[in-house]
Image 1 (cartoon, rainbow, N blue to C red):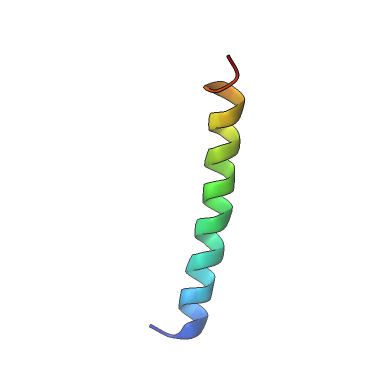
Image 2: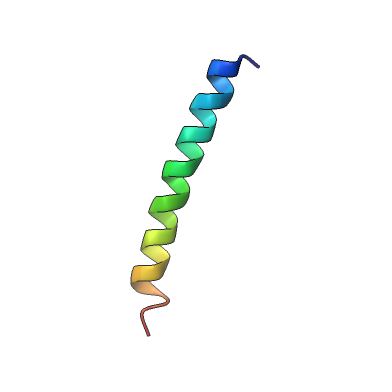
Length: 31
């Protein structure tokens, strides 16, 4: 893989992780 591809994948994973964590904290761990 090219470094650009690795960097793009890392950024996408970070954004996805933040979105999922936000949803989980809002819905499931709100109790």
